[in-house]
Length: 418
Picture 1 (tube, rainbow, N blue to C red):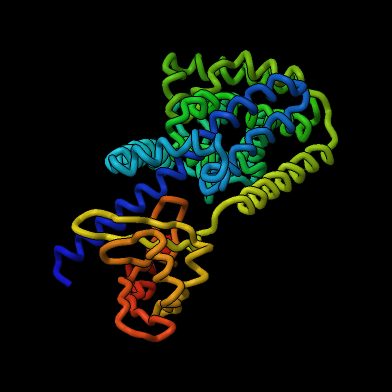
Picture 2 (cartoon, rainbow, N blue to C red):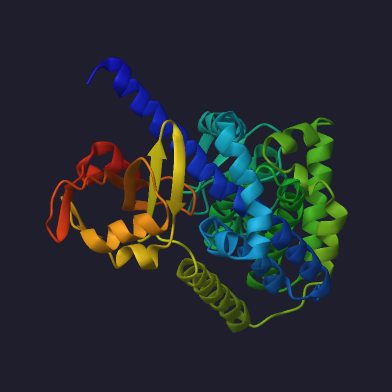
């Protein structure tokens, strides 16, 4: 194999990957619009006091990531109408797929750069052990925050350590620990992944503010309950924090934005949520989480059950004639053809008399080709089929025709793995 042939095959598989995965992502984008509307509406309908259920609604976006291969898009009129136009355009203009992926990687690079910049900033801060907890102390007038999914780090402005007594500091520290314990850092990461993959949906960017706000409200409620259930005192502490930080520097908002708090600048909304606090039973919160996990898992299993597998065996068969650069006839009736034609890993077997009568009845002319078997990734997408030229040079009842089986080709094996 020459270098040029090898490079052509590499480009072939890369273009296929771009086409194959972009199609699935766009299908998820289409569904994400509907899910976004449902979540936004239900947030308004659900009681504002039911913060746990309102937060659980955002889990509806998780099954979206498994919906790209649903049979709905290829076997229903609505699905075909929604998705096949995109398949046709991208098939003829592969650069559109590469453009989508380029913007996706660009968006991801931007988020990673911001996270790494913040992580580097935190790494240069002083690490202290306060009341048994390691925290990172900064002279910057930022709101306390936590970063890191696998190794969470709590950041506290030095002014909080200087201005607050032990009880107030413990309340602030408890809030950050609650974010970690409830898994909010992981949720934020998954939300960013969703935004990157489905960047074409602007409702996800708009929803970021509400998503983070709902997580923050849940954290406030849990913190208040664990801290003695004094919402008024907790609200006063929050307002005092804003006042102290604002007095420390007029550029507080700039640093708060850098730390990822721009969604929370509307402090009035957060105070309102704190004012709505009512004691809750821990069993209710745990049950909401358990039901949410079960529902999401059930939806994923349900979606997988109505989706295509990694590879779809192609059981169809067709015969066509080719003469002087033109197709003389084509027949896709697999039921009829399979009665006359069979095959194994090396040969095609044709019932000679029945097949030749079939060709005569269809007025076939020229060279006769039989196309059969193989697999495809999605209907009309990828895969490979086998073919052979029918040659009747025997009087045997069954004509045995050799064909080349591509199943051991590295290119086919790689495509099957995708």
